[in-house]
Amino acid sequence: MTARWTAGVRNRCRQTVRSRSLRTRLLFFITATLVAVCVAMTLATVAAQRSSLLGALDERVTNAAERSLGGVSVGPRNHTDLAFLREQGQAVGTLAARLDDAGNITSAEVIGTSGEPETLTAGQRAALDGIGADGSTHTRTVPGLGTYRITALSADGLHVLTGLPMDDVQDMINGFVVVEAVVAGVGLTVAGCVCAFVIRRQLRPLDRVAATAVEVSRSPLDRGEVTGLTRVPDRDTDPGSEAGQVGAALNRMIDHVEASLAQRQRSEERMRRFLADASHELRTPLASIAGYAELMNRGTDKIEPTLAWRRISAESARMTGLVEDLLLLARLDEGRPLESAEVDLAALVAEAVWDARAAGEDHNWQLTLFLDAPALVTGDEARLHQVVANLLANARVHTPPGTTVTASVESTADRCVIRVRDDGPGIPPALLPSVFERFTRADASRSRTGPHQGGSGLGLAIVAAIVSAHGGRLDAVSDPGHTEFTTELPAAGTIELPAIDTVSAPSVPSAPPIRSIPA
Image (cartoon, rainbow, N blue to C red; front, side):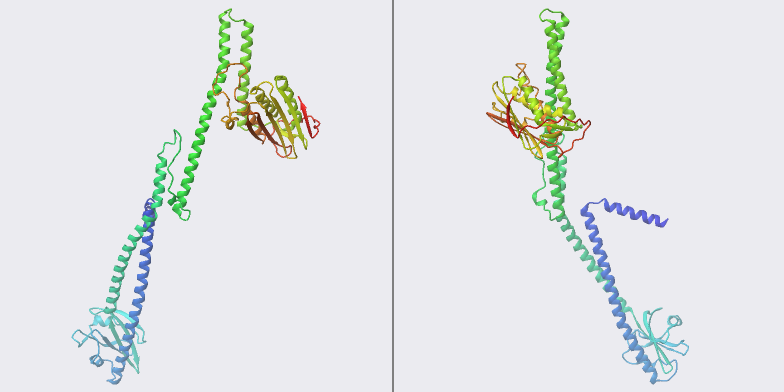
């Protein structure tokens, strides 16, 4: 039961200490260490001093016993003579006794305060029993006289017991303990004050770091633009100190939080803009379909049913294409696996150029091949064809008639490059950095004045997503009279895509190393 209670008290003390602040705990542990050191030093000093004083007292006791033994040797040889106590030089409190051969006390006296010997009582004599005449010293408490240091000597059949009081030694030791206690108390008080001041001063950087953290925690991080968060001052970010390491780590965390929140805000803004654009792009064909359907339901003769059905089919196809583009982007964003097969980019680009020529006869289409190795890549042939088709369609839609559009294929042992360039008016500089973002259009408004004006703004975004899914890189440069899109893909065998269905592509003979083909 006692052990359980002690353990409970110890646990409560530990919990109390742990619940205190770091400053309090440091001061507590330093003070406890200083107290332990002071107590150990005091005990060691007192023990050494007591040993020294007792050694000196034992030497005096031995000297007194030898003098007593010498005194009885020249006197009457009986066991009761204590005449040597009456000799000059005997200190007050000196105790002497005679022993018989059996070690029993035959007479015992002590020098009283008057300077004359006084006979010991039976009780006092009983306190001296059991001391052998072997020269060893003993400590005995004599009733009415106090504590004595006693020894007994023998020579020629004579046995003498002599003792000196220990009161002076005890008083010196007690006084020394008091002095040590006072000095230790004053020293501990001064050391505690100095430690408290030093600890408070050294922990001020932590206080400032904590204040910075509290200020940041009160910032409205859930709304608005998160910028200009409070940082820990430079003086509190010194990596040479623990507090500086904490301050520097907090600053890095605040930088990371600020950058992450800013990135999230930009992402949310892009998502809101994306949803608004997608909603409008879908609403436009839906409104047309609903309008033509309403006219047909009314049975009005203002529009022919054939024309209405044709417009409904066109708007449905437009909406279907937009939904398919959005679905493709969503699948690519999710990282769904693509079909993996060996694709000949030279044949693929040639087919795409012929298709573009059929769709835009008023443009001049060129195909150029620079093949140092077969232009073979590993990927989804349909998606790669869509990349080239979208780039060519972008050049056709956004350049005037008569523009020359050149598609080239370059291949080496480790990469294949597709370049689509035109000599049209170019991309506005303000639009170029965001040209691969979704719903990016030169016309910032969502209105369309003609059926062939612009597009949904998803073509280049799809191109970027497909190229990224194939481990490639896409770049665009544009100046008036020169716009070029560069698609770089790793050659076959240098990268593996997670495949869901591998289809072997037919082998197509490669073209000569350099040739230009007017499409």
